[in-house]
Image (cartoon, rainbow, N blue to C red; front, side, top):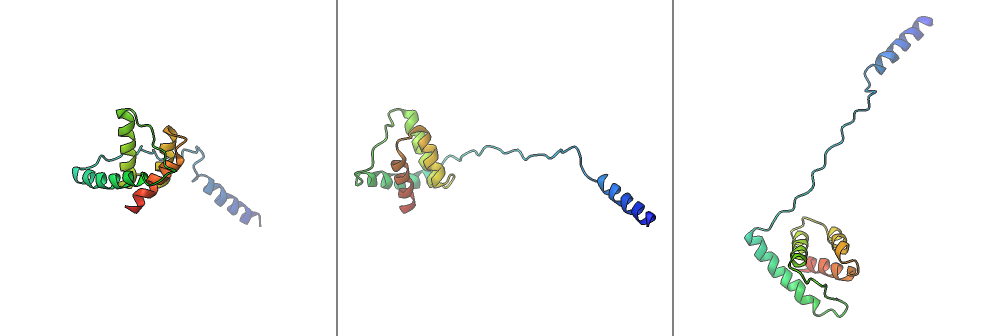
Length: 119
């Protein structure tokens, strides 16, 4: 009986020698996603869709135009819409990112996101 206990103990001790006690788990490095710029063909298709969405806002009385009064803001918004249209970001990501700059325009970002799904 003592001999069996000795063998079981030896087997269990040998298993502990195979484990990693230093806790050196490597976490994967996440690379930031780099968004693709539109090709000329994609840019033309996007522009047609963007015009349709923009024109549809005129029929909605609740839609309040956002103040895009600088070239930087206009480029930011156009890039954001392109990334949504090109499916580089989701509808929710579009709305969340838009609300970081224009927190009072949730309706407008939702409207635009839905508009890109229609056209």
